[in-house]
Length: 107
Ligand SMILES: [Zn+2]
Image (cartoon, rainbow, N blue to C red; front, side, top):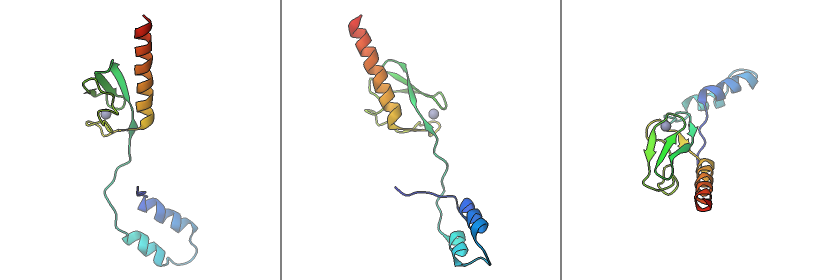
């Protein structure tokens, strides 16, 4: 995976620590190719109705996954707000499902 950096922050740090007239490095930073990017928003899906509906904690959108977990449905991000769902969120949802299943079998 590539890392994206802030050209503005990099040049500001260069200017802060560099002594003397700007060298070729500053020109390289100014001219380096860039991609359009936005900061990643990390969210999680919260199970709303057992195994059928999941709610994005960032925007509230409901995702209906037809009895699949977000991981099984390859739900990596929110289709409405773009929040990225990480594996910890899936694992916590699995734990919730397992907890509910254990509770249901004990009732
Ligand atoms: Zn969302």
